[in-house]
Amino acid sequence: PQGLRKTVKRRTFKAIMALVNTVAEVAEAMDHHPDIFIHEWNRVTFTIITHSERAVTDRDLALARKVEAVISPSASRS
Image (tube, rainbow, N blue to C red):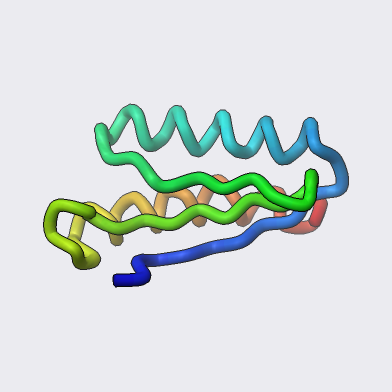
């Protein structure tokens, strides 16, 4: 299963790390955690799937909406 995947680019490594930390706070509050892959120093890919179900669940969709809300306001800085 692939899950829900979103790749984001920012201008600096520091900006990517700030985004990762914000998403981590959201995920921790939901007790539902995405896979996070930082690559090319200024990109991050978030993958959301319920591993135990081997499928996308309602919890995954809820987390994806919250992650998108974190990403979207700063999309102009991509």
